[in-house]
Length: 505
Image (cartoon, rainbow, N blue to C red):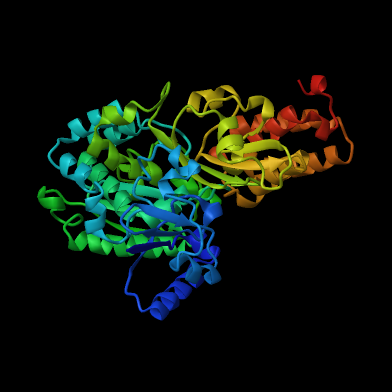
């Protein structure tokens, strides 16, 4: 018999460490010596702490488990939820990037290899940089951090650049509301990220990598640092990556937690020890990035998806998806929702199915009013847009963006004018101050929304003009995308701004 218990940050916040203590005491009282394996999260956050027991017939699940439940579970007095992978929320997923998360001991390299790990790196180590690029382009992988830029093209730019030093930088500064996929990978399957970064290094000629994350992620930082030490000791990192004769090493750097440092040039400034402010582009980071050298900057999920592409083949990955959105996307369902968690699926599922069917509707039991997709800068979609398929171009066509694929659910009690004001206030607080449209525009936006709330209907036109200026004139997406939640709230819920539907149009 083996017992599995999540040590993911979400599980810890919900009491998994207290369950671990109770489990140890209960096993001692029974006189049993059983292997207890601490794992990442399966992503079903509403069932955390999730306890799994494998008696040889597969892993059965219990959750959410309280310390007082443990003795009864071990004695067979508490009915399980059945086999973990047959729970409907889990069974309907297509797990590629997150296939090992919650399954393996995150810091066991042998466990990682036994579940397909390092197969991709071993294959890539036999390939030329050009051949690796061809595989990446065939896969259709696009940046999972928000911009959706083709990963193969970015890598190729760095590969062809001439420099004495190149870098791979992983953007793990996960600051969007309702997002936690990066943290889950770093805590639950860190070798996957290491492997993806090593493949990027072999492809481009970069010999040094950095994972830039935030101080709010202490567990992820600790797991990643230990995983890097173990990978280096096993020859996965270092001067001779898996005997390939090529070098790649990496380390973790921790920022103070500024939202704007999720923007790649601000991140690079912070990584260099400078103030986290946006750089003007050009030059692109792919040509002049970290310390002025060619640099690949990719999100955690982008890099963690690379190993599966090289393990199973680019075409296998590309066969999933919709239109130009290939592969799978880890949708993070949060907010006022019954079944919150991570749901990895091929692009193409409708927003309504994700919220109402997979998410189970609101936790409050009230009707869903709106969902915000893509973090605090994402648009609000009302129920009239619930048939929109999850895909980059499909969301763009509806005036939204996928971003980091966080979906935050609101019921019919939500104040949409208040949410629009929050977007402007958030931008004002988090602005790096580099450009006027963002720095000043967001402050004026808060003032203008306060005027509208007080009944000044004439201020709506001013708000629209202000949003256009911010959208067109801001240096980065912080100021440029803040109009998305503001204008989508205004257009979808005009009555809350004192307008009729016709006037809003």
